[in-house]
Structures are given as C-alpha cells and as structure tokens.
Length: 106
Image 1 (cartoon, rainbow, N blue to C red):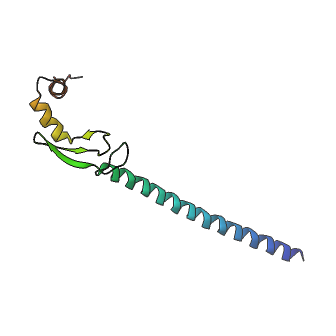
Image 2 (image 1 turned 180 degrees about the horizontal axis):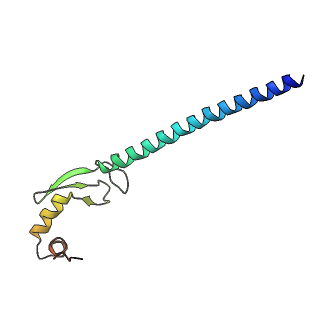
Image 3 (image 1 turned 180 degrees about the vertical axis):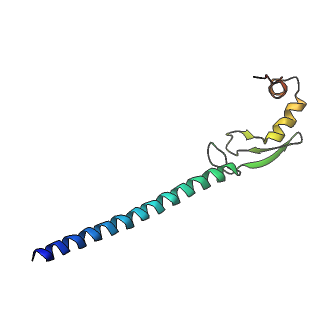
C-alpha cells in the first residue's frame, strides 16, 4: 500500500511539474506577443502618426519644405534634412544659430 502512495505522489509531482512548465511557456509567449505589439506601436507612431494624440499625420509643403502636420493641431514635424534646409535659410535666426554655431571640442 505504501508503494502505491509513493507512486501516486510521484505521478502528482510529475503532473504538477509538467503543468508549471506548460503555463510558463504560455506566459512567455504572451509576454513575447505584448513586446512585439508594443514595438509595432512605436514603429507605427514613428511612421506617420502624431506622437501626442496618435492621429495619422498629413503631409504638407510649406515654402518648399515638406513637413508632417497633425490634423488636431498638436504640431508640425520635420525631418532632419528639412530642418537643416530651414536653418540654412534662416542663418541669422535662433534656428540657424542652433545649427551653425561653432562646435566646441572637449
């Protein structure tokens, strides 16, 4: 009778171990899916959605410079190249001074 109890106990321990392993794997898969979804949200936001409200940005052209505009008036966004174009035009303004100030060496 004692051998049956020992065998039954070992079977329950094995079942419990397999169950823990199974649910651990399920949890890891869920976490991986969440991480992937979050990274896609970041990529989606970077590819034409307003970082403030999430609305799709409209492409506009002002004074020969392409920009992205939020239709809900959260702001306008420029690429680095476009910003440099504006800075070159505005060489004597604060924006031009920001881009064309002498670089200090360490």
